[in-house]
Length: 120
Image (cartoon, rainbow, N blue to C red; front, side, top):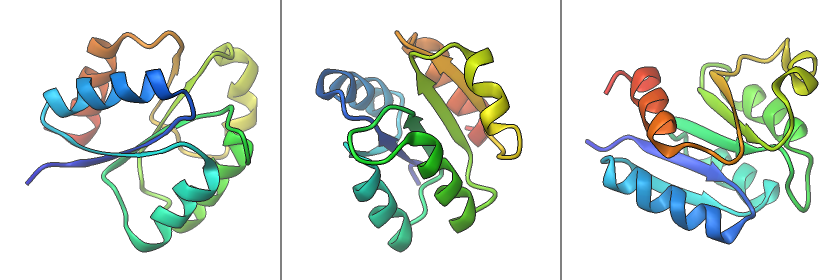
């Protein structure tokens, strides 16, 4: 059975690339373009992994991360951001994050990290 990855990203071009790369790698991809729709999805379904942009139009990504961890503490999350890792590291110390990837994302590395985390 395919693993499901929830992408929370408002850049349409980037979501198309995520979708193509991750679908090609054998994953089921669900895309939301804002925090509200991501949280609505997570209330009814739990994906195998979340890729979360920190800069979204409606809710700060760190707030979404906190809400994700309230819903499912064990759900792996990979943060993708244009911000420097050191800049945000102190902000997410108390929340379990699998990894931080800076944009532009190298999709080969992202797919490898996802497979490592999901054991696939």
